[in-house]
Image 1 (tube, rainbow, N blue to C red):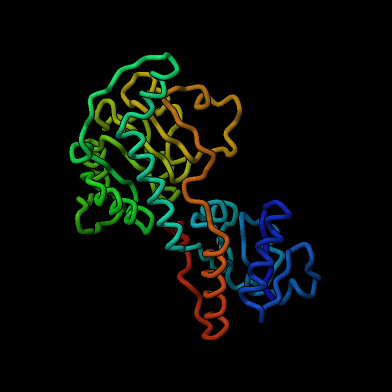
Image 2 (tube, one colour):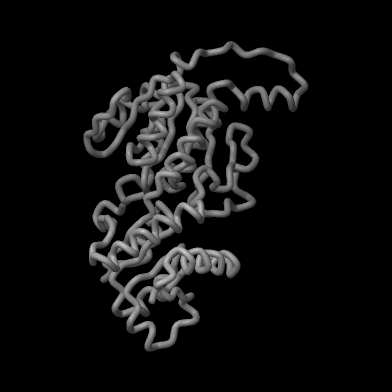
Length: 311
């Protein structure tokens, strides 16, 4: 028996359970609220979507949980040294979707769409000087599955791309930096900075007053990672000083973004409602079902989250 635990709408929960019941028909899949006390004692696997930690702790024999999201920082923050393993969603389709979003919004910034939007609001007819793709330097923070594919897609579209990761990496066609010194070097040569880092204790507040100051004057920023990686006050100051020309933000420390947040009314900020790479139910269901079936057959878990690194 497998339990579904999630702080999601009832209709969404029902849809997930229906999909998984069809994908792994040999398993009984129930919502946490429907479990008897005896069933809680025997449950060893949970499929989760922003689960309530108290629900997880009510399952004493839980061996591992499979998240339906790529990011698991919320689970890691809410649970201290869990007795079970955590598996995050690694979906190739998610990486494709993210790379599409990264390319789209990079082109939006590269071709000065924010400037033309302002001009339209003022009925101004003015052609901006065009910069060629090969002259627009792109920096990508995070070279995991999402960052690597996004960086390659940018290269394929003619941009010079550099990337940064905590540990040294080598990717063909991408100038790779790592470590603290590497971060400063990357930022100094990024006309458009794309953040795709996981949220960990090391990356929280990574883009702050000091590090944002390394960016070239007039650089732009895209954050498709997690909100707390950016110091909001620092970014707003850089935008007001016109040291950063525009920020495309899809993730925030508090979601939904508060109605009184200054990002809403700042014409140098594009606010998106966390839509850059949503989990696709069909592909996610196939991956999770395959992982569970393999575990039932072999006893081998999928790759689990490193509790120290947080991903």
